[in-house]
Image 1 (spheres, helix red, strand yellow):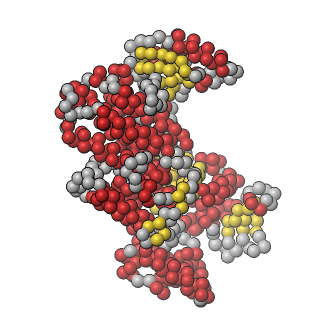
Image 2: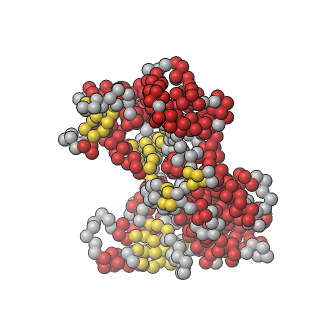
Image 3: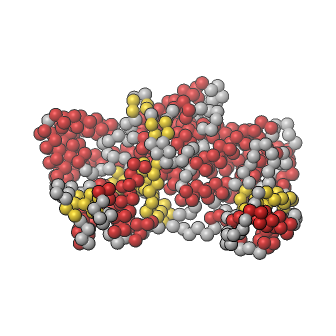
Length: 573
């Protein structure tokens, strides 16, 4: 939009920044041709709020009369409380295509909407599974949502620190230590640590339920850990290191990495400092059971009681969360810290942030919890989801089967990798279509439909556009006349490309990926229609060149959007 608006500033005598937020690209409509931009008169007049409706309409009319058509604007009309502009078609075509192709992966991010955005330091904590316990669907959602938020913030130029906060401390390690001494095998631990630790954990839990001595030795093992016993700690360290190695390998399949593998274990000493600080401020209350609590309401309201210490003096994960937040502030001096977990922890985080405030940390308001809903019914052939890897293998398997059914699968160099990338796209789009907060029922068949609004359709569109470029080569691309793109199908695509920055802006405001998802699905549907009607083969060279340019621009924006969502676009399938 940069090149198109200066004229309006002059006529309206308004500072550009007021205008930027009031002008938006018009969403395309299926049935009729629409204007390219609309100026919302309401938001321009926000300063003096007593405008009644007819008044605004008069205002819009007057504005429209003031603004003359010129080399840029070819038509001006008024809508309901808006002034609509139609931009000179050739200029529109040229500007949009040039911007998309020149700015490449930065297209939409250089928009005026982001011009006053200060560069911040942002910590995102996500995924955070528990060592030796199930990696359930909640962890999977946290992983892909957190990755999206980190990608988006990074694309906007912020410095992002991605933290995986492992559940690597607590009573479960007493059980694990004891269990491993009873049922563990070193070679199984080395070859498949996550699976083996999980099996040991399940088995020792059964034993401990029947046999009090097992439960007792588990407790002793954890106490040895808490006291820093060298032998106990070295076994614990081995469990942790091998698990992380395995996780890194699996996250790589998802195209995800972390800057830091932190964990509750880091804060066992620091949580004692938190308790001392609370005590010195006179905030710690001892209960009859011997636990230590803080009353957040100040009037004994039972729902505001926050427990910070067990009766035996050991810390709880709530205390460790406080210690972790304080430590990260010291270490990173962040502007924002975002926790991505399921909505069941909403109250927990509200209390953690409130605790930080009570302790005198004003930066508590820089902390933010992004909650998400529950997924029901995700099962793999082996039953309920226990390991992330099961999900990835299931995705790959189902996608390979689907690809085998579709005859168009060209001889792919690496069908496994393609299947995994397409399958992951399917999973991510299914997950990101609605509000993050809403629960949904998982359905494998729906996820993998190739028609309709799915990740498979996005990948298919990307691959198809890529093969167009391959088939017709770049020879055409130099010969390029914008006057050849006047068909309604081309104009719709150009108008849609124009809106990409607004969609990115919306997602950056509310951290919801669905805006980007629905934008990309619409783009793919428009591309499918254009692909049918705008032939390249047998067209005169300059027409073919112009259309190839248009399709290249679509593919570029499609790839940008997919990558932000955490999807790796495939070039053939």
